[in-house]
Length: 327
Ligand code: NDP
Ligand code: GDR
Image (tube, rainbow, N blue to C red):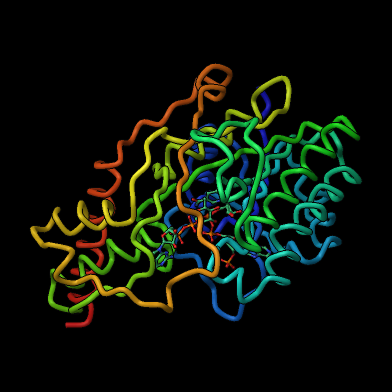
């Protein structure tokens, strides 16, 4: 069998690193696109850097994408790159639109103009459901985004559907609910909590400042979710799939479990801070992934408790290691 080639955008992000690992396990030739930065930011991919080929490109520059597709000749493109932080999207709405929305069109154009046979994965999001129109959310639930990020993702989703229908491209959209891991960025609420739990437990911090504790999210493990991305591109027909756990928990519940894991009470440390409140909030997300279970044979493996425990323990180790290195 000939070796398959994949191009991942957003390689340096949480999902890019897990997806690259999965594709290497499947014996793919993996190219990972990174944008030019003044300092190299390969923390999440250091351990696999020798096995993948890092190539330069930027979602803001279509010709860079076209050139990359010509030189790497992928069978599959996973478009994970985005301005992905919801809070920042309120302050940088235009940049978020340019990257997270128009970036999708640039990549779809590059695929179409280079080799329309390439299978394409678009990283869509449960944030598109926003002010939810039904509970739980499925592929048929209407969208009602609540942030510039959510609006940008709706655009990217529909462009993916449109290129599939207009040009017969194998373009799939994965509507992924929140997925976390020890590699999650420190500004996202789960990692912010687990990292502070570790720092508080080890005497390096005394409080954790958070915004609204009531929002509920359907939180899964990123390592489980990248498998769903890959499965979508192995189907004969491209389609859209909700990927979720079917369980929802509040930010407060996450705090309770994370602090409780190291025998602390969150109420003693969490301080509410207006600075982390959003102009419009997404109060409740819970996904129904029946279609993915039926068609892809995918289901999540990691439970909520396992996820929180894994993240707290990883941060406990990380903080201890950082302290040893400083000593
Ligand atoms: P991260 O924020 O961890 O990673 C985003 C990646 O995009 C980084 O590699 C970043 O590079 C890259 N990037 C940003 N702007 C550009 C640009 N202009 N050109 C090229 N690369 C760029 O996100 P995740 O890994 O968590 O998420 C992956 C994708 O899935 C995103 O599209 C996100 O919106 C979406 N998503 C995520 C969910 C989640 O819960 N994690 C849920 C649903 C959807 P750099 O390192 O240089 O900043
Ligand atoms: P989200 O993730 O917006 O769902 O987007 P995030 O972890 O940022 O927020 C989750 C919920 O927690 C509330 N919250 C706080 N959030 C942050 N970041 N910091 C805080 O201090 C804080 N306090 C309370 C938020 O208001 C929100 O309700 C993530 C991203 O990965 C998107 O890219 C992805 O598409 C969606 O998940 C699905």
